[in-house]
Image (cartoon, rainbow over all chains, first blue to last red; front, side, top):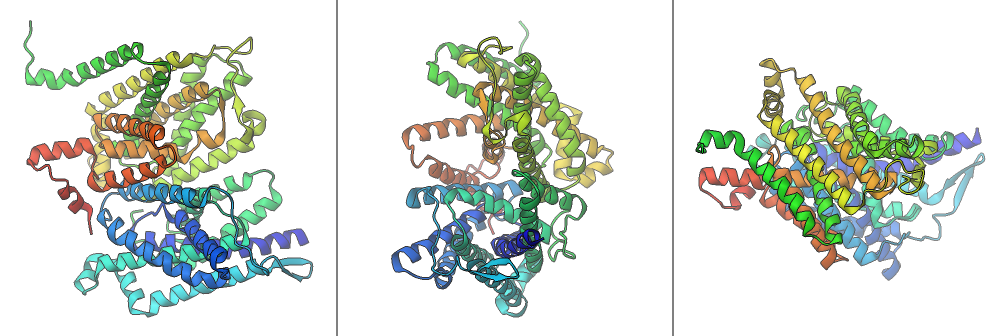
Length: 294
Length: 333
């Protein structure tokens, strides 16, 4: 029983972090109808920026995250504004291929700059654990979970209540109408992508604090983001949260009960089943589903 | 001697060109060094793969991002039957193709109801999930440690074909894929595929059985991919799930088709030859940064030639405008 509870707690903590990994991916997909295959590369890039800040300046990763977010926002803004905006109206292969090319570029670039070795961002406290009734709650993971959930909730508030957030939502719903209202779609798209990469970067730094990473991990993060975004419904940020937690639990329970790597097959089985029966995601109606062909 | 009228040329010209191309490829083999034979064989392999993806992705417009599942399945079918049942490669090869086609029907019936990104991701999920199943059935497939096909001695039902042998097999598969594409693209079936691509609801409204067309196309595409996978498995001797189900193989097929021109007969061939040639050249001359350069080339190609080389040349000739900037303007925000 303790083993099961331990797996559950671990799954929930991991799930919160996975939600933050995926929420930007879901936002970009929902607003721009772009499946960003380079999303995982931005997660890893964030981890490396956090790691570099920690190694050369001794900055605590949870503080360094602010700088990581700023750096990644600027990169993401530029990538969307000067690259992806050039093909954003094309058929789906085009955006998929462009972002795949970007992924190759980023991953290989990181391989050259940071080598393919596994890295992690060390802290003095992340390994310590609170013990509650025989269940270990590692401090670093708890902190990462709380921050991830906090950032996601903040994002929802920003989207619903600020001018920027509302213009992003409006552009996502009907770009033509939004432009007629004086919203600069190019700028809004770039902002959206920048926000997504900033979130990915922060998630990456936290991943680096609680575990290890290397450039080759990028593809795995992209796939996980796919699954979570679809589970939650595109562009639905609370949905990404639910999808992330579900994914964390599936992985943790699967790892506890199943042998070998059957757990990975389970994750994709869940994805295919959800796609077949509820393509708009598990959580209510996807906000942008009206525009996405299903 | 009969004169070649334009109508006659349009009917038989492409076939004649294909025949000349295949014969030239046969002749080329005698002119190559051993190392080059392998490289050119790999190009034929990708020609066959790109043509098979083009059937479902290019003509029918369903972006199968899990196409590698048929490659892996065909490869594992051949490897497992050759290892455990001591089948001859020549028996395992066609049956591997049929197994892949059967799998395409089974997953196609539920998944081909999905459209756009959703289909792409569902197929990706199936591919990743199938890989995990293959890894975990380690009694049969050797799991993550891989499986080795016996190629020498008494256990080998078929002796290893060698570079020259595989050159011929890949060439035959590329020709088969070309033949099927050529036949399909001019048949009523091919028009049904294009109609589904352009507007599926309208296609259904004019009486096309869209489900049957899509599933059949997917099966055909899976069959060809499975045949190539089986050959690849035998060529590699030892195969691993990570390699046989590598997403990168799918992406390469898509890149080749899109760069060459999707929904055309010639486009995937041009794309496969150009990209594989370029990739090999970069690998030899810029070993450390070749993937990086490949990424940059894909980005530039997608921005400048989003409709693919063949379609670009067709449109440019029709409009008398060869400016690449018009291409950039087309999909720009």
